[in-house]
Image 1 (cartoon, one colour):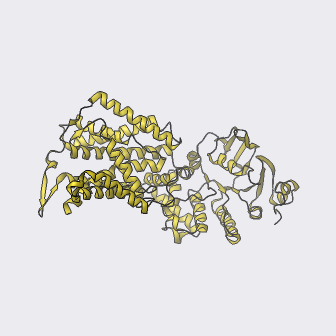
Image 2 (tube, chains in turn cyan, blue):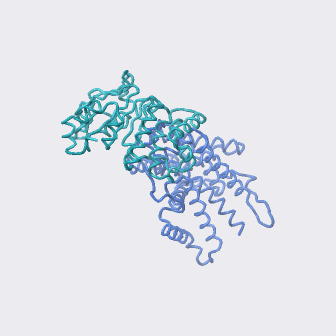
Image 3 (spheres, chains in turn purple, cyan):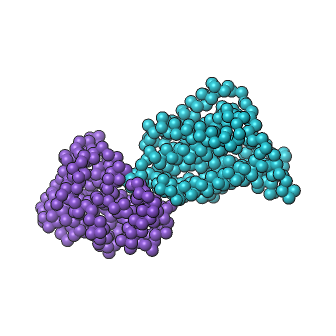
Length: 242
Length: 290
């Protein structure tokens, strides 16, 4: 499996606080990598660094072996790195279809291409019925799905998902995991997914990267992570066993 | 009555051009651009400089100069301050405003200058017993075309779609590849073009130029934005027309003894509207994300 995205000795310091310390993350082409860790472990900071919203204090980010550490967020999006935010952040005054089209024209696509790709993305997520609804008029669960449709609309090579199932109930959470799997199957992109729901992430990921207080605690298969005593301790009794 | 309505529409169109120019920048980058008034001033004096040329040529040159001025402001003053707090941007715009005003003052002097730009447009036509100024018709018509053009641009073009997205959530737009420089520069360009047209109409209405001529229009633009509501672009236009309607109707129907209190009553009316609709006539309750 060829390496798609990686970080080298990545550190981020905010004043005296060390949010990330020497993190080496690797994402293979076509791989789903789960990113877990207790609150404050640095997961979102890492995603911000990968997507260009946070400059690392030390270290490099590479895409296809090319250093992209100094690229800003729009440039990374154009290079095929797409992300979602924990709060969905749809463009509320725009229709669902337009929300998706922004992702394509934002990356330099024509309006007609945008229309086609938006339609395809909405079909993939079974949202075609809501295409012309204003985003703010959608129920929360559907808004999360639209956020995902928008993120994959420009056909990214790397998809970074920040808690796609946050605020969803168990059924919706399971459906979201299915959706992520379907996207992955369709696009064949590499996926990094942060999720609080450990059970969901162990079921979804090919490999899991565990952060704790900004350092890498473990990297391994879901089975290895599930039974790892350090991981269990880090979660302090939080249920890791599914 | 109908004549007053046309007056209100004409004045409202002028306010709307100014208010939209300001609201566009505010919604995209959280900038309260006080220097917008100086774009109008630059437009006015440019028109004076090109006086004597055919009207269409003079207007086209004025638009070109003001758009260039707006783009220069963006590049030299606001781009270095991008991402700074709203207060910093506001201070930057104050500084810029004073700088331009000072420059105009040095070059043109403080004395009001008069210019008659419109010639035949200054005439009136008789429609069914009403006297309608050709200028009012021109203002209403041109503004209508510009508003429709802006709506089309925002809805149908890739850059327009990106501008709407950036106006709602700049960070999210960047995450999707939208390039801030292009979107912001375009917004300044549109803002400048609207300011130029507003300047032409303003000068045509008043016939006078002073270095501080931009101040009152820009303040009225801010009032229109607050009245219409923050967070939505078109609300600014609605606020502009309502403000003009209030102003013209009070002017027309106040007893002469109270006429001096017209502006006070206009603002009283605005306060009452905002009491009942604190987010403005058409604003969004959650206000603005910056």
